[in-house]
Structures are given as structure tokens and as C-alpha cells.
Length: 564
Image (cartoon, rainbow, N blue to C red; front, side, top):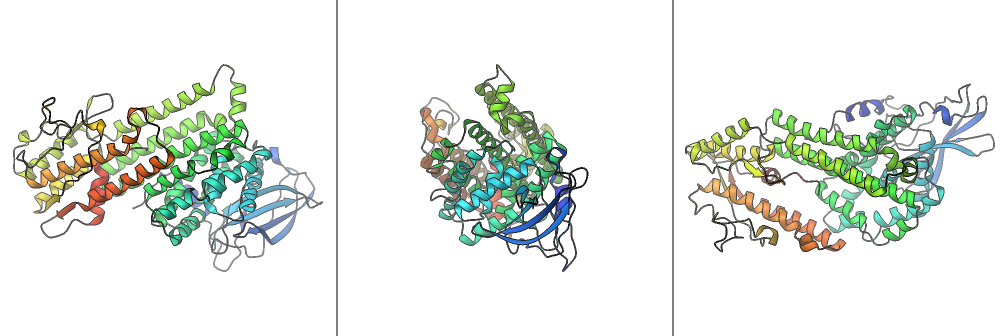
């Protein structure tokens, strides 16, 4: 099940224009910005080239056109174009009568019988120039490196002197020996999966998926319309694209996030960053921060939506959870729009806002994101009525009076110490377990042995009697007289909390872990979750064994949504 925000669907309709079997695949140039108009009445040659796997160019076709009174040109190509089956990228260049390239735009190759929009505007000119350098310097058309290059190039004011540094950044962070791709290959992703992942960045046919053609089309439309909100949305779309591509290649989105972290820690990246201007450095840092938040929220939406559906969450609950995620993503876009000028050109923004410091802006942006996250947690909380329904189900499953259940069942403490209702995912998980028991099934779980982290020792109290010397121990829910299945699920929930906290133990006492320690902590965390899932057993009705997807979903819904 793949869920994305509704704003993605018009994009797919916009660019998926079927031209008919056997007909030439066109590149739709669209309108040229008036500020970037050609010379009225002048003759131009439009050249289309394919970008080969080694980053070199091969001319495919060309045609002539004369600019009209508004400086626009119209043309079509009778020859068949390369498609996504042949190459990853196509370059469109507009040359004047002296053979000088005056305009250019780069785009992913379209699928067979489809059309891609190619922007030709100040931004596309800079993007094409920068990506061509990245490709030729590194002798590759690597879609992943190009994708991140586009994430960083959001302004036509990018200085040509910064492009070599950008090329080195992509070489180290994405393709380096300890970069993003190497990390994935070293942690269970096959070469075939990685190749599929890259191909799907370019062209992804999965229902409701987005790919790089959507990104290029959105940027073209945003620049043509001079829309800040569209630019913000276009800038955030790459997170959706990479997650969709990972899913198509059967790569765990959590591993994708880990690989993204590894890219930021790659050897040589700091030196490459130091070689670019301070303005571009700030722009890159802002883009990374925004991209990180966006891709993490996209992963949350996909994983929790899938898990809710797997464990029978009704559509109303799924819709409400997704609405919370969508509102959170919308809040991110609003921040991106509000500070869009800063993200694209920090130095110019600060110069235009005297008295505003870089630190103040960072704090304001961080605060806006934290407020959005707080609103998200409220939005996905279960209602009192839903908690009551869940508790009644549990009581029915156990054959007891609801009043005999633990009084805090369905409640938790928030970060401010307030008692709040469980979020929708946890309530759905507990209801699923209750339904399994009602239907004659049962849940078994072998307790984990991961050491309890120091941060939990003061409040994990096995006998609920603080200060008597038995703090910091797992509860023995069976000895408390709980029915076996209920004790199993409570034990699972506690073990999930333990492995979640264990992941962040490396930060205890103000520690600043190394890149290797952070990467290992994330990988250990993912491995621990897999171990917990493997410890679950039982049936949903006395006969049907709880399957792998259900075990994985149960673990996911026991966890608090997190951007980390």
C-alpha cells in the first residue's frame, strides 16, 4: 500500500502524456520566462543530446526555430527520442547563430510513449551547467548524485566557482568509499537493488509514485509562475522521490535514512564544503536540514500507514493519522516558503535584513519545526472514546471487568510530563491483539535481553515501587497475574521502549559520538527491532499463524513516530 499526499497526483497527470505507440517521444519546452526571453526575430538551433552512462554527450537530433516577438520559440522533433530504457538523462540546448549555447535544460529521459517537461529558465540553466560538471568530473550519470545536486541547486545565483566544490561533494558523499552508495551495499543492499533504485529515481511507474520528472516539471512551473510556495514544494519533493524509488527496489526506507546519515559523515566532505563560498555552504546546510525533515516524515507516513492497514486499522483512523502527517508536511512547506529566500541565498537574505543574525534564523526555523512536531503528536492522539473502546476490547478478550485493567492502560507521559492518550498506532496494535484473542488466537513473545540503558534506570521499575532497590529491571507481567497473551504484548511494548532508548545511549552525559558510532547505533537499533519481531509467535484465530508482515507491523505500531 503506497500513500502520498494528494498534491502528487496532478503532477503525474501533468507529465504522463501518452503520445501513442510507435510515435516519437517529445520534450515539452513550455513557456520561457519573459526575463529570460530570447532575441525577437533571431534564429536558433535546438539540440537534444543524450547523456551517456560515463557522463559524455551524444547528439540525438536538432531543429531550427525563430524567436517570436515575445522571445519565445516553438518546435518539435520528428525523430524518436531516447527513453528511460536507454539512458537516464537528456540535455536540451538552445544555440544562437554562432553555435553558442544561450539556454539549456536537463531532464530525466521519459518512459516509452510519454512526455517530460523541460524547463528552460535561469534556474534550469544553472542546474544543467552544474549537473554536467558533476557528471563529467566523475565519469557517471549517477541519478542519486544528480538528485542531491538538484536538492542543493535552488537558485540561479549559484556561482560558477562553487560548481567544482559541488562536484567533489557528490563524489565523496554519494559515491565515495564510505558514502551513501557504499553504505547501502555494505548493509544488505545488492548491486541489482541499487541499480533499480537509481533507475526508479528517473522513472517510476508504481501507482501514485513520483520521480525526477515530477521534480523537474514542478521546478519549471514554479520558476515560470514565480511562485515561492511552488518552489518550496518542489524543493521538498526529492524526499518523496527517493523513498518511492527505495520501495520499488525493495530497500528498507530506514536503511535509506541511515545511508543519508552516512553521506553526511563521508571522508572528504568537510574539505569539499570548505572549498565553496560561505553563502553556498549555508544554502547547502539549510537544504540538508529541510530535506532530512521531509524524507523522514515521508518514511513515517509510509511505514505507519502500511502497518495500520496490516493490523486492521479502519480507514477513518488511517485518514486521521495521514492528515496529521500531511499537516506536518504542510507546516514544513510553510517554513520552507517563509524562509525560502534564505535557503536559496543566505548571504543576500541576511544583507537585506539588517539586525537579523544567522543564529536567530536557525533558532526560529528549529522552533517552527518543533512546534509543527508538537501539533503532529496532538493530531495523531487517540480520543478518549477510542481508548475506552480499546480497553473494552481488551477486557472482553481477557474475560475480565474493564475496571480490573491497569488504570494507565492507553495513556503515556509526554515530554512535558503530562498524561496523554496513546497515539493511534499503539491503540490499533492493542486492539488487533485483543481481536486475535477474541477470535480464539493467542500471542506469544520471548522477552528480549538487550541491557537496559542508563537513562531508563531511574524510572523503569519492575515492581512499581520506586526506591526499594529493584528499579531498572524489566517487569515480569506474567507473575503479576496477567493472562499470557496480555503479558506478552505488555512485555513486547516494554522491550520496544528499551531498544528505542538504547539507540540514543551514545549521547548520555553530553557525549558527542563519532560518525561511526552514530551509524552503528542506528544499524544496531534496526537489528534489535528485527530480533523483537522474530520473538513474536502465536495465531490470529487459533490456526492462522501471525505472519512476518504482522510481526513487523506490530513492532512499528508500538514505537513512537520519530524524525530521528
